[in-house]
Length: 239
Image (cartoon, rainbow, N blue to C red; front, side, top):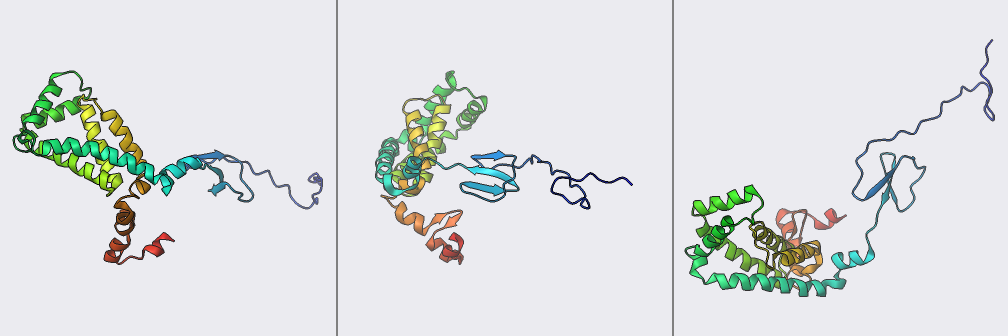
């Protein structure tokens, strides 16, 4: 009778087990994770294992972490945000008592007319948006919105109150001006606002955010006061 050839170190009665092929799985990697096709036998730092794939956990630079996520440079962000806030506050304060902005909206109407009359607007959808505001007479209330927005952004940044939100709306207005063809100081102010947004957790440490973030919190992590109103335990959620 036919017999299975004996393998080295394997009894003849045991059937030969085929080698298990390495299968490359199509798994969605985490951000900043590198994948390999080898299946590890045990986890070893600094790797994170998920669904049988070896995923390298890429750590950020120590300086970047200290700059954006710790209080080591909170003093620097305080200087930067106060400077940016002053730019917005002075720009809005000059318009606040100007009837061309707060009553008739004639100043914004002239701005829209000049922007639409030139060739600096590159996007047709934005040109159509400005034309809609101009022809519909919406510049009267929109001018007030611009002025109030500039003042509130300036106050929020100077006082360090909801600093990340204030920087976001400041960057949003900078982008709106740039889309309309106005360069001026907008690129610089926009860049500084983005950096403050990246450091939102510590940019307002020397300001009201030291208490606002602790008491009010964020939409994904309510602060102490909001948690009490909602009847939620913040310490349990943190763990």
